[in-house]
Image 1 (cartoon, rainbow, N blue to C red):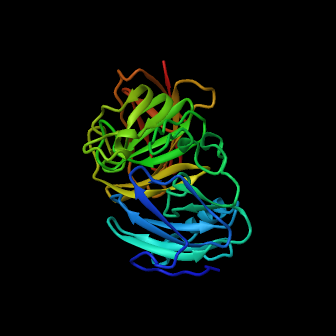
Image 2 (cartoon, rainbow, N blue to C red; image 1 turned 90 degrees about the vertical axis):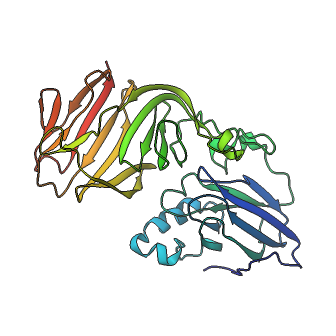
Image 3 (cartoon, rainbow, N blue to C red; image 1 turned 120 degrees about the horizontal axis):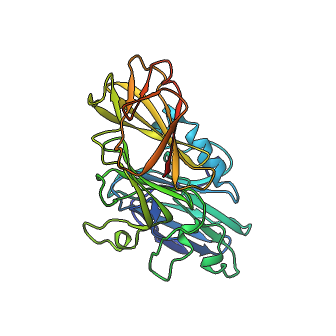
Length: 345
């Protein structure tokens, strides 16, 4: 049950506490956490300063993942429900805001002390776009030790952002990346693999090993800023496009359809000449420099060719198809599911 939902365009005059939060680039709220006393009237003002839509849900303690999963299960009903699922774990909400919109809610904080997460539940956002409302009279823990915020936010100094991810925790950012189009998505799989996916052209652009990304310049509001790669790039796809139709050189028309999270990692959905393709990228289980790419093309009726640069320094293996002159030929019946392992030679 959603509690005490009030939506206004301005701050309430009788609030005990007013909290201002902005949704910013890189799937982040600018305020990593805040603290209120139990039983306090709170006005929370959310400004969407990003170029994509966001919502905000405050959940019961230890309920963020359950609410995020429930929002994903809304599927086609998600947009009309503002990606807000029903359930007693959902306490207060602000519906989807488009870029440059601002709204607020006013509520009385619980009498029961605890850590109440707030999260954006649009698909793919909830695994990283969350922080915490502390309802307590006690001091909050040191930021670098706070288990209720993403690991990527624990290195922040007062008023600054230094989001270099050093743990093995998976993460995903829709953010401006070097050598990619404006619809880039940065994915941290594990300590031995991060990659840049270009949603505009529906392809893997490059992959690196080491840390993840540093968004400092973007979060400072600098124009034309890009995320900084923390690590060493070991692979770039310099081909015209990796998947060809019927024969090598026949490059299809692409259309990006989104992604879903499976075990915290995205499976991208795109179309090639109106044929649905699903692709998921994982780290090599033997900790070698490389990756495993799993493709699903359930309705394939034509041969699919995987084309790569023979000078890219990678060794290739596939669970389906045959290699012809350095390219992988996948017949329609084999394209329903196939895996390509790429490791550095």
